[in-house]
Structure formats: C-alpha cells, structure tokens
Image (tube, rainbow, N blue to C red; front, side, top):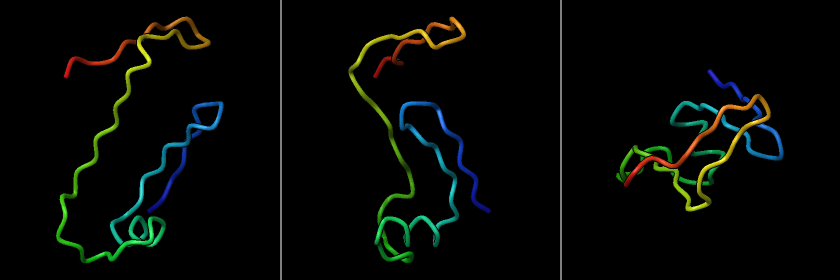
Length: 59
C-alpha cells in the first residue's frame, strides 16, 4: 500500500511498505539498521493557510 499527501510548496508525505521504501531510497530492504525515522528542524513556529498555529515539539 502506498499513498501520498501533498502539504503545499513541495513537502510530500508518503507511506511505503519496507521494500518499496528501500527501493525508492536505493537501499537494501533487508538492512539491519533502525526502522525508525525522525523529522526535525529549527525553523520555529508557523501558521498554516487555515490559521492554525504550530510550533516545534521540545527535544
């Protein structure tokens, strides 16, 4: 199963199965690394087009 959602201005979010993700990333699907992912940044808070304010979670 794969789906993609666009969040405007070039920030797509996609959900892949392990093999499809490995193929897209050019990695071996049977790797021994961590299956986790972390997304972070230091851009600060922002407000989306609907007026909802967001801010980074504490680390």
